[in-house]
Length: 304
Image 1 (cartoon, one colour):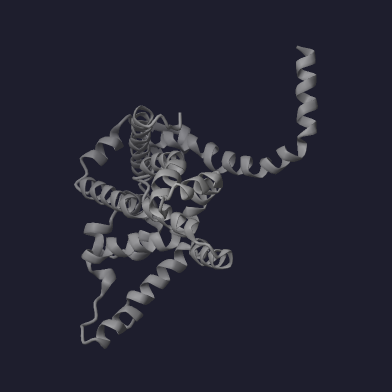
Image 2 (cartoon, rainbow, N blue to C red):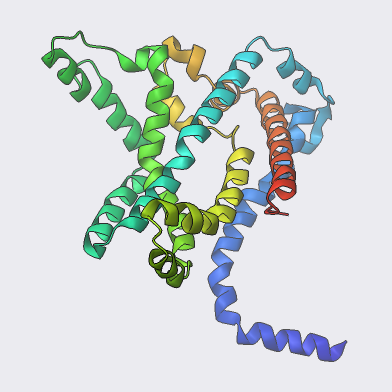
């Protein structure tokens, strides 16, 4: 036992610089993600700020029942699911397609330039993106200037429910497609180049090489990322929604996150919104576990 402890200490000392590099990230996750989790018990209590979390009285599933019977619950659940599904349908394939297109480029200089341009939007803050969207879609914005130039009437895009989801999803694709393809490019870089050479000798076209070599090589990575995406399907980017939506678009834009923001931050109903968050987390875990189980049965690729 003493020898094992000594060997462990010796190994830790030899790798001390690696652990020091990991320490800031570990502390960040510990302080901001794990320590606050004790606050989940607010969902089961009638929270009183003067008494504190542990001094407040227990109410069981009162606030879960309140959300289930809330007339707004069905609307926010529907909007959250639809935005999540539409985003998954359009946003998930976009990085894969872009990575495959990058893989076909022969000019390294042009490839690096296009990659840099596509990555750049990821580093723009949500507030800035929302401001750009408002400027472009305003009555005197760039898009309406084009419409009026061809004889059309200006459209108040952000006040029209029919346009909100398209604007939200397309802006998300623009902002994340370049950065999202990095993982797929890393997977593509691991493909043995001799496979392409052999296929070319056999007379395979670019399309056949992409179908029979490229896609099978990145399929495991795609499946893993798809499982992650399904697990986060209820985690719509409500920050951008709050910055873009208006009462006129609540019917299609009001999601669980924005509803919880209004009820919890603006309405000070902390117990109620904590219950909503916990309820959604449980559903997301069920979706993630189910997707992982199906993937393991179908493709033998899974997270756990």
